Each structure stands twice: as structure tokens, then as C-alpha cells.
Amino acid sequence: MLQQTQVKTVIPFWERWMRELPTLEAAANASPDKLHKLWEGLGYYTRVRNLQKAAQVITGRHAGKFPEKFDDVLALPGIGRYTAGAICSIAFNQPRPILDGNVIRVLTRFFGIVDNPKEKGTNARLWQLAEELVAFAHERPGETPGGPVSTRLGKATTARGDARPTQRTQANNSCSHLNQSLMELGALICTPRNAQCLICPVKELCFAFKENRVEALPNLNKRETATTRHFIAFAIEHRGKFLVRQRPADGVNAHLWEFPNVEVGARHCEPEQLLAEFDGLWETDPRGEKLTPLCTVKHSITRYRITLEAFRVSATKRTTPITGSWKTPAQMEALAFTSAHKKILAQLSTTGK
Image (cartoon, rainbow, N blue to C red):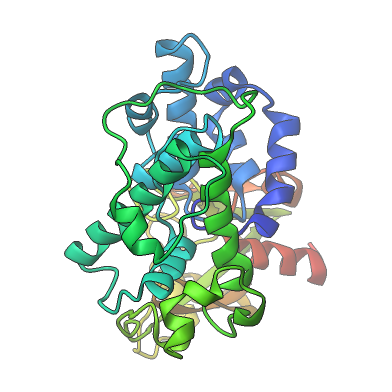
């Protein structure tokens, strides 16, 4: 849940998840509908499908016990180098490096790395620094490097191979504490804007602070220009039921539900004309159906700025659609909708079902 999502956002989702699926076995065996409903609103839904796959691997291959070896953790679906390092260092106090956005910001400012951290060579250098830091903490717990930190760290012995798992009951949690402190330093003090340098515990050794270059680092490329997209959706109602459909398994927002919609781009299209284009839905030309504006939803997904216009349609006749199902409002509440279409559903509830 914490991949690409802030802690304050995650907490209520995590609490609800743990009430509904408190064990690995429960997560491994849950239905796709239940998984997506519990995840509804967190976005990046591939994560929840990978979470279930990982739970199934753990129950089937590791006897239901979360693995402690780095390579075994890294092999789990949905877990990359950063997440595996975070788990192994924080949970098991292993000398494994982490490198997320917060840590990148701390390291580039502290060590004065002026190249773009997304470039391959610079990124590799940052991973090396993170590895040297956690190796130093592991080998010399409680010791503060003297002199220039970068010079002292260069002499540290880098951890090689698989570390022997260390339980959290051990008195020394230096690796766990170090990596958590790096992330917290970036999240709370060494922030992207308005960094709290005056209260930073390492400001006197920080390159960016001494050179007055805090705002210039990390040196990231300008963001891509946002792309505008325009969709029109229809809440088609017949005798108390609405037509909804589930997105395909191999696309964006896979398995989530939505109202029938079409992307129109920059072209001007009459909603009545678009309504007629849903093949297999209408016995007769639907352009005589009553159609009224319902709401407009504006939202963003990565670099896309999306406008979704929704119209309510009171259908006098209906056929069985090629894709989709007719659901009552109560039935729709139990389904996992995309965030934008969840707002359409909420608007239907507000304006009367």
C-alpha cells in the first residue's frame, strides 16, 4: 500500500484491510471482487493483484511464513529492489540499501550530487551511497562518522551476498533505524519545497545547505507537458437498474467497474450521437431517449488531465448488452469502481436513484 502512496492516506485502508483479511491465507484466497473493493480509492490496482499473488507464493512455497532472505523477498510478485530492501532492513535489520524519492532527495543534497538522479550512472551511484551508509551502520552501530562523511563512508566495507537474518528482538537495530531515519528526514525535513534546513540534524555537513543550493537539488528534468483527455459517460437507467461494465483484465484499471463511456478527444460530439454507438444495447434508435447532464469530473492520472462528462439516460427499452450488467444502486455499492466513476455513482445517490 505504501508504494506510491503516503502513509496518512494508507492508514484507513490498511485498518480496513486487516479487519477483512487479517492473515496471509485470507489474502491468498480472497475473491478478486473483494480485493478490488478493499483497495478501491488507492489506485495503481496492479499492486493489489500482485499482493495476492505474493500471498499465494508465501503460503505455497514458504509454508505461510514471510521469507527473510533478500533474494526470496525480491522474488515475490510486485516487490522490487527498493521494497525488498525496505522490508529486509526495517523488519529484519539486514544491511540492505533503500532508495525512494525521499532518500534520493536527502542524498543528492547532502553529498552534492548535481547530475540527474534518474540517469543510469547517477542512480547507480546513489544506490552505492545508500549501501555504504547501511553497511557502516551495521558494522559500527552507534558510531558517528568523524570528518567528511563521504570520505569516511568510502572506507566502509560494503555488505556482500545474503545477510544472515537478524530478529528485531536483538538490541541493535541500527540498519532498521538508519533507513527509517533517512526516509523520515526526507519526508518531514528535507522536503521538496520549503525544506526545514534550520532544524536539520545534519545541516552542517550538507553540501546543498552550505552552498545554498537546496532548491536546485535534486536536479530533475522538467515534467512532461500534461496531456488533456476528454470522455463522455452515460448512467443508463431502466426500471431502477443501471448499466455498468467491468474493465478488461489486460488494461488500465483492470477488473474495476465503470459506466459506459467513450473518449472523444478534441472533436465535438453530441452526446445523443455517442449514445447510439453502443452496439448491441438498443433495439431502436436511442436518440429519442431522455438524456440530462449529471456531472463533470476532473481528475489526473500520471501526466493525463482528464475531463469526464456524465449524462443520465432514462431508457424506455433495453436489451442484454454485449458487455456489462444491469445493477441496482445497492448492487453497485458493493462493486469496486474507478475513482472518477465512483463520483458518478455518488452523484446518482445525491440526485435521487
